[in-house]
Amino acid sequence: MPHLNELEEQFGGKGLSIIGVTSEGAGPTEKWVAKKKAAYAYGYDKGGALKRELGVTGIPAAFLVDPSGKIVWQGHPSSLSSNLIEEHIKGAIQKPLYEWSGKAAKIKKAFLGGDFGKALEAAEKLAKKDPFGVEAGALLQSILTSRVASLQTALEVGDILAAYDGAQEMLKGLKGLPEADTLKAMTKTISKNSEMKATMKMQKRLAKALEGELRRRKDCDERVVALEKLLRGHEDTYFGRQVAAAILATGEARTKMKY
Image 1 (cartoon, rainbow, N blue to C red):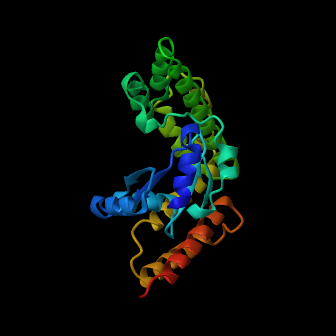
Image 2 (image 1 turned 180 degrees about the horizontal axis):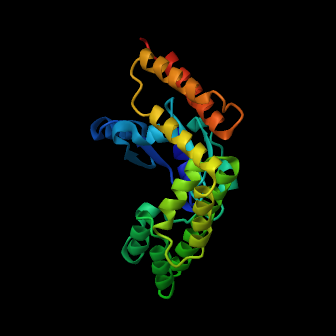
Image 3 (image 1 turned 90 degrees about the vertical axis):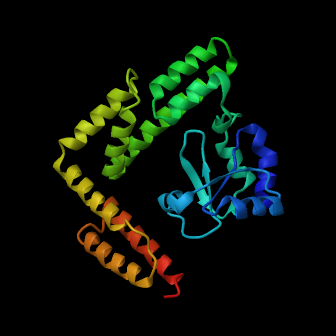
């Protein structure tokens, strides 16, 4: 898209990484890229897993992620403004992660594997030889701090399952880091709170109800019935809002189907 090419030219050297994602095969994708003269990176979402995870119901769709890994905007690509990017690009590393190689490869490998402790250690070692190590270390710490904060926020607003599962997953790579104590305390609080455990159980039921692809209107109708049962008695809770949003998304998907 011309607009994305313009944003790439304007902010590509300042830390913005534009990555187009498609569930199409390499053949049609490369033809499209050549025809549209797309000047940004692109990748493949085989099976549409990322699309489902992000709740995308219409194409094209775009997401703006800040340097800490938080989604700060979503909408049609043409609506993504330079001002919005300027607001959230502060702290972004100028060299995108997919280009980290050579001495920075160990940092990248550990980070992608979820091992913040090893990634920060590798960045500290690289910093003694290369200034990029300092930049990488600062970025990793910023991401770590932001992710822990987001889990704390999830707990505060009532998204118990996200807080618990997220903390459990992050703890695997926080050995020796002070953030580990924070997340251990969080999981302990949830495990000892009967109301939180009940909410988490309901959220798991919601996740199960959302499994499977919606192919027909009948599928949508059956899902709505199941979701409405989950909603009863929880209308004014965070969980209730999650269910209501799922019902709305299912209804929108139904209107786009022919049968």
